[in-house]
Amino acid sequence: MKRVVLLLALTLSMHARADEKNRSEIIGRIVAAQHLQQMFEQQQQQSKATSEEFGKSLFQNMLTDLGVPENKASPSLRKAFSDYMARCSSMFSVEELVTTWSSLYGKDMSEDELSQALAYYESPVGRKDVNASQVALIEFSKVMATEGQKRMQKSVSKFVDDIKAATKK
Image 1: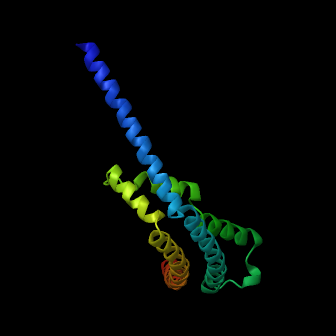
Image 2 (image 1 turned 180 degrees about the vertical axis):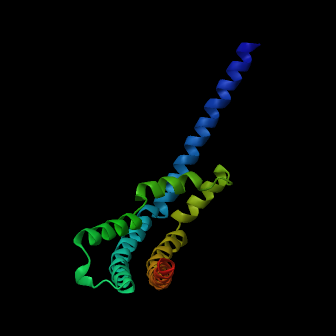
Image 3 (image 1 turned 90 degrees about the vertical axis):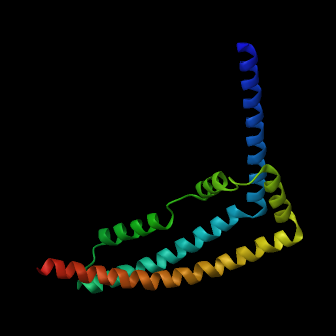
């Protein structure tokens, strides 16, 4: 009896692993069909470019708000701020983003539903959908970065004002 139970458990375990491997392969194909790696790379490049520009502006505004002339800001302060902005703009690698997305995608979908989704993304209209998403993502990122900069500058200015007020007490 123990052998039968052990054999049954082993068989079920092997079947579950095969199912999981098949699901992973389908999801990997969906990732490829959606061009997620390229989309994440695009987004990261846009984010880095925006962060660099924003960082320069933010640094200048902070100096102005603190009453420090730009020529009085030390090179080490500039480097520390620049390094900070670089770290903020790329906290995750593209591989980490793809792996995390893949591990979360389709948890509530059956293998058949995943296959249907894959068929869609590999179809002509699915490829057009992916292309439209990529184009929209570029513009979306620019719009959000611009608006984010405006909001962050207001927030930093308010923060600097609060620091000034707190240190005068």
